[in-house]
Amino acid sequence: MRKRLPPDVLEYFRKEGSRGATLQAANMTPAQRKARATKASKAAAVARTTKRLAKRAATIATVKASATRLMVKHKKAKLAKG
Image (cartoon, rainbow, N blue to C red; front, side):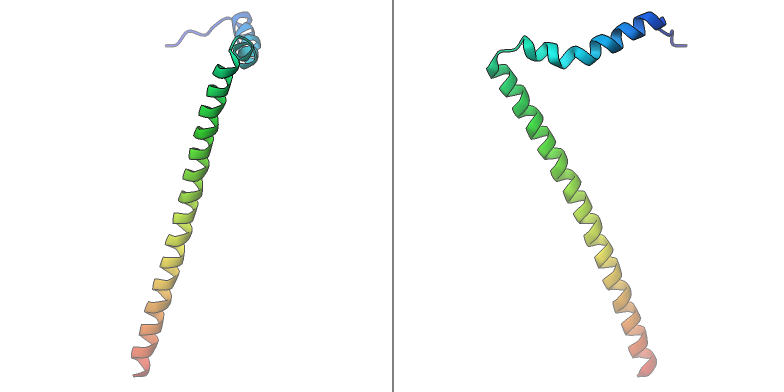
């Protein structure tokens, strides 16, 4: 069973954790900050692209399924007439 940390320790970690990025940025050189920002920007771009492509694939699959249903319906109607 996991042990829980005392409330005062949890509060300390919450307080210090919220300051983490600010303190790290203050201790970095401009080149290090730029490298970190560039890496984050590229990761965000990959995430956006992945999300966009997944949405597009779902849309295409839906359109294909609809087209297939319409073709089947049309063929059945044609066979019933003829």
